[in-house]
Length: 383
Image 1: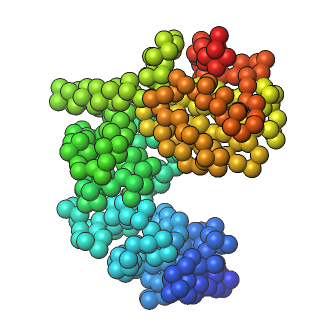
Image 2 (image 1 turned 60 degrees about the vertical axis):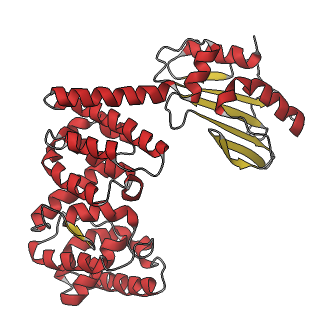
Image 3 (image 1 turned 180 degrees about the vertical axis):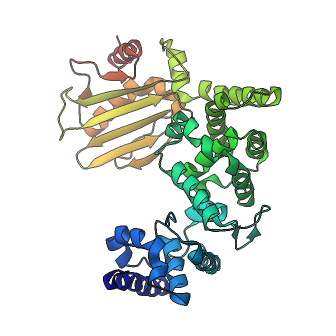
């Protein structure tokens, strides 16, 4: 290892030692994270003993801790560093809660104890576990993960460890990070020994709110459906999937946007899977500087509609019934009364002294659904 590389590793340790004492992010890592990521698996060539363990301690805290090049001889130092890390309180500048699942899954223990299957045995085992974590996290959405379900098949032998870890953390999906959790859940659904156990856990879990439970079961249903073509079918699993499908369908059909479509008698090619948007501009003419309002509608029950209004330096933003921004102190519209959106816009025009109206072109778009777009355009024009 060159002296300049060694100097960088030592500077990183010193920077993070100082930062953690002051409960802040170190200044060196953001500027040199690429170089540090490349050097991390080779750190044992220049550092030894307590200094190497201290490097790994901070690297696990803040770094992109890939271990593809980690030699077996440095494995004990990395595990010792993680053990030291578990003694810190959870916090953004100490030990990020979003890493709880990956650390527990990869090392097999945390401050509360070991997983039933035990701790990670060696560097090769650790590398395999981190590859699984990296694979789950490389996707930007649950939908993207499910579209590539076959790419998760090589990891399904690790599903029992995920089930142990998620039970250890009480399936705290938000705390563990949804992308990682649902990527691992897809692996669990691809494993015939864990799929029913994992689904049952979510169905009987005590949730903080009914909305959280319903959302989780909807995502579980879609995850199970993505995995089914890759597994042997059983009557028990088919019955479970059917039950999840019914719960999900009830949520969709009760959603505000779907209810609006049904009340208005609009034709939608697939009422369970659609999205649309209406946009109005000042005097019906597009301008980047003028007032505008948009209403977005879709069938997904967790975000069935939203409104975004801008005029001058002010804005009104609402996701479902509760506005997140209301600079104009407007009376909000609620999902049950979305039918009154055209009249609500007229009230806004009068109240703010603006003129948001349809132009000559269609004000509505709908993904792969021109008929719905025409119906929405006629609705806003009251034809």
